[in-house]
Image (tube, helix red, strand yellow):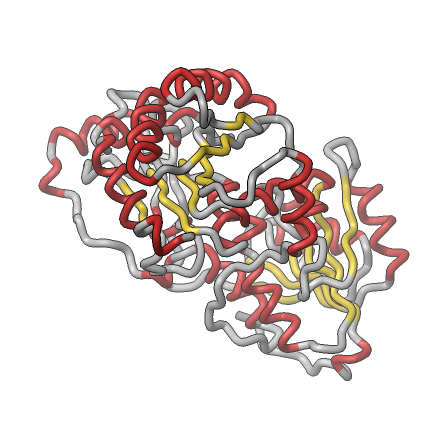
Length: 381
């Protein structure tokens, strides 16, 4: 980590944070943003984010302004808009060359980000990776086959909590003097927003709502099988007397429709509500806040749910809960389920073998986790 130059009066600083492009990653940057606000309480902090994530930052206490870009914007177009704002400090949260180049082209005097070849030319403050940092390296098929042949060579010990990705972003903010200690990821959702989604989707106030997110944008290796979501949802509804809200994007509509139809067949008077492709990002935040818990794969909505205060039951397969689990690392209120197989985590989009990491997470385990997480209905209502 480079030595810290003197910082002007924090009240005069204009700071740009170049945000990340994935929903879950964006939520994991919120502890760093909150620590940055704590360090510079009077500064003007702007966040540059893809337009699809802009609404995530409404009402957030760490952010004064949100600037957006689209997938079609060139690096020159983005930099020109940034240059007009005359920022003093820029933090590049993504590890991409483009994120650092945008700050350099915008002529921001102090540019902070992780060190890497080529990218170093565009940064004034190059942050070295933390000792505990773990790169999410994709395993090769040959490596996976070798691991499953010799499982005794694989350590079963959990990775330390400090390897979680929220520390990755806190480490950048720490170069500017921010406190590196973690905070729970946080998103602001008002009661007015919760009431608005209740009215829009006609959600009764006396119903115990559980959320379900059966998709995962990254790929099928992160998705627990559809049939198991259905079986777990049926048993949980029988035991907890809940109703399900099914979430997802446009690509998840067919999956959510199948699950919804199966639950309607089982519970015709209290069917699930299929909201896949029907919500804005702000509405998703409010609906997740309304839910008692969310049953999900490792996904963006998983992180959103924890950040608005909703309990999470998540199934992990190709990824690692120690690196990208919901909420504050080690938060025991959330239940994170995974099978002890030697090839997991592989960080692949598709399983090259037999999908054992997901298939060995049984329906009964998930139902038990749901019921333990939500507690007796009498205590909830």
